[in-house]
Length: 259
Length: 336
Image (tube, rainbow over all chains, first blue to last red; front, top):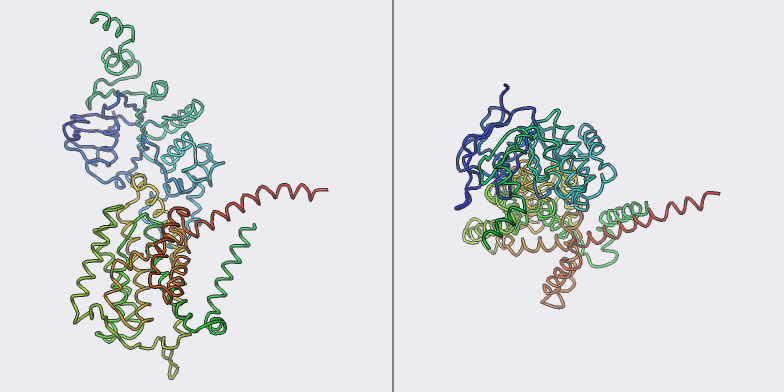
């Protein structure tokens, strides 16, 4: 078995009295699409924030392809090739769609030229044109990103992740707020990306999760509740109880019993 | 298309006016207005330094007067104490302003919004009081006067700023060059990085931009612009004074920028022109002319949040849309 793309050892993050991520040790194999699911407040986004450097852990370590990246700054982690999208869609609202992609591409370089006209960079421009085509945003290229529909912004976020050519992509609820048609387009795009990029996805839409993921980890209260293949997870009693909830009629029976 | 013609027309009109000033103004009105326009050009560069930070990087600095003051004192002390000639003194002023911006920027750009605004004020106040108290060196509020060294000397030919026409063109050339440099930076990859940070600094760090370093670069560049304007103002007034380091001066730069249009290339020039012209016309008749400044600032913030240039851009955009709506109909008519 090859080296895991991402590994954490005893990762812990507390907010005051609340332990959001609790002694989490996880190992994600390379070349697999990995989904992280769990009820609200399970610590999924906090886990992503620890991986991408937005938060530093109170304990434990994070290894990316064997390299210890614990406590590094977000831009340093980004330059290693770990890119992420945010749960609340986050782009550069006053820049055009094309410029959003362009600066994301440019940010891979250490040096931003202070005097050369930005428009003269042909390599970046051809990448922008290709990504616009791939994400179906070509018709909106010159529109300020802040004026796009929510689904288009979500698509732009995926485009921004793609154009930076990541080696590991962390997607935080990428299809949240998308129409069914847009969700289909996004799922197809993510599947396409998964052939070359390692992907970890947080998602609430179970159709998306079971449509994309090869491995699933279920978090509850900051710890791993279960992990395994989609089939194993779907049949796991504990997962059903903690996450999917008991069937409503059982609740009803219980309520009736207590009445 | 209409938009392009109008904008080229306005640009050429303004350029022609600025070049013709030394002959046009004496023909039309008092000579004194040539020096008012010189002063407007210098202060517009100061406003541009506020604009670079606020309009393009999203950092609202209330302390740019500090770097203006360092530019001023760099020139005055360079000439008066160190015996430098014109160009070394000019360079010394700009370098002092940039060095000061680097030192305070290292601390200030870690913060954003009101914390950033407060720390910039604090820095400028500290150095204001230092400058006032170090009277033997700085002259305090009275300032220090110096006599101008010549700008160029070729044999017996001497060009000096004591000639008002030469002074005007010298200031026009330096200010134009600085605006050109700023234009280049804003449209470069670095400038796009600035805009990305202004729009969403969290996202900017996630795509791999080093927000801290880029903000620091912008802060030092703004220190350069403020330093050049301070150095020019020292040459223009032949003196330097601690009173120009007071935060009221910084505040004026912010008001000029916001009313003129933050985040637009020429907003600061428009805002500075408006307020200095108002000051020159009104202040001789009415001592409370700053009331007009306050009123205009409030009106601008409410009715033109992107300033005067922002309003103009809005009109031009509508003109574009009208053109786009009209032109297909026109081609139809032209078809037999």
